[in-house]
Amino acid sequence: MDTNEDVKTKRYKRTIFGLLACVLILILIILFETCFLCYRTFYHTASAGDEVVATTRPAAPAADQPKLWKAPDESTIPAGAAGETIKYGRELIAHTAKYLGPKGTVMQISNGMNCQNCHLEAGTKPFGNNYSAVAATYPRFRARSNSNESIYKRISDCFERSLNGKAPDTTTKEMLAMKAYMEWLGSNVNKGTKPPGSGLTKLAYLDRAAAPEKGKAVYTQKCQVCHGAGGEGVLNTDALTYVYPPLWGPHSYNDAAGLFRLSNFAGYVKDNMPFGATHDNQQLTDEECWDVAAFINSQPRPHKDQTADWHDMKQKPIDFPYGPFADAFTESEHKYGPYQPIKDARN
Image (cartoon, rainbow, N blue to C red; front, side, top):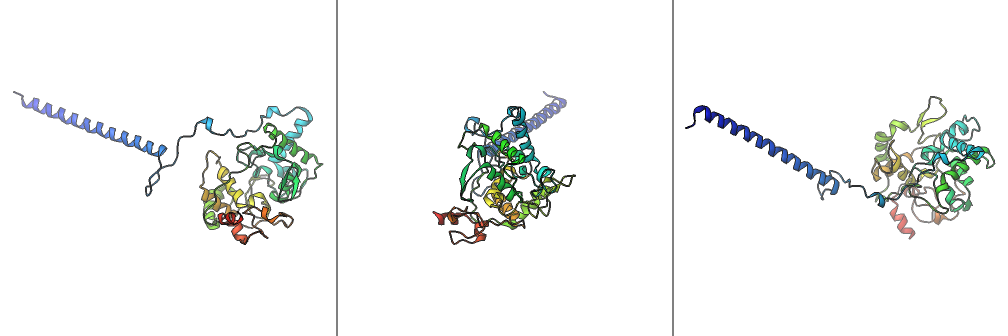
């Protein structure tokens, strides 16, 4: 017969085992829930009406991903005078204002921005408006000028539009150097082709007009810290060049620049903004990109006479904001959209 002491011991042991069993069950429940959440997060989106936890899926196998263009290694720059010309061209692209800005050491023909403010990382970043396809696709016919354009014309347009200035003469050391640099960058691209990662991402059209007022909220939250509350940018300590370029105002690109078209600016933002974003690490939704593009391009900036552009009105891009047009849509509709009705009317 058990003594009182034995009974107490057995009860104590049963209590301990019971507590341990409860703890074990709790741990198993937590593990199950964690595994389920991981499965839901990486392989499923929420059903209609549910809160979406995440829509991230495992990356496609590397073999299924197009290999993005990569700039040639600097070790391939030739020695001697040819190599020095290429290096100078790169320096001009990266630090345009130092040499060709309002207080440039060579010429004073641009607004203080650098070419790489639009053509990121000296024209080498994938989906960063790079120069990978320039040598391979120029000379080529462009409807905007109704002419066969050379690389020199390509560079001249950037100076006159994005840099709101004057183009260097084609015989100058600077123009020759920038051309040589672009040709070297495209030396690994077959003639007549555009490699993956060239140009800008084209986003799907919104089913509404892009909204500057919504874009202002995006700008305030995501862009203002670098580009300033008034879009004025941030100058370097030398007061000559910009750490972050102005996005509107007298020192920014004019209304003839490629980025003044919303489709270009929205695609540019998608893969490159805010600071740190890449094609594989996008930080804004498509709607946010369209809206912030609308806000920035609704702000005041220099005007360029464009009456000589687009001899054939039918060739004007859908989002080119100045008339006359070959359709009945207004300048506001061409600037902000919605664009699908305009596209449908052209078909």
